[in-house]
Image (cartoon, rainbow, N blue to C red; front, side, top):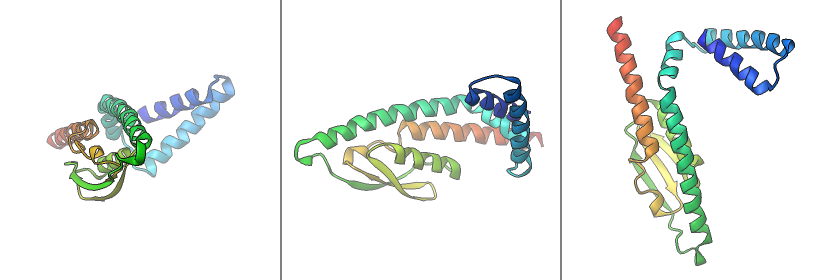
Length: 168
């Protein structure tokens, strides 16, 4: 039911107006998408509760990503505008993210890639290989706010999974 309400709220938000035909079509559309999510994608009430539980952590991660993108933009701009490109010292480095869930590793890799001046070349287990425009871009990556936020999410999700197993 929660996922249905989420889809319906998104429908109303993105539509921008609230008339009877918009509400009626939104109810039908939300129901169809909900059935698809439950039957085909395997969505469940437990998953909805997990998403709600880590919702605050997701918002903190988005804010941290936004700050990191701004900082990386400024650092990349400084490298680009440096006379003679004396600051350009590309480097490929590897670091252990200490994340165990593959989707969290993918989120981290994509976050690194959308941050200017760096992109993820590959993932091998929990080890990410990253190319940086400058050596300073590599400093502190394993202990970055993004990695810490994802590790907190993973701990929270593992705690929820352990609690579910304890009830069974």
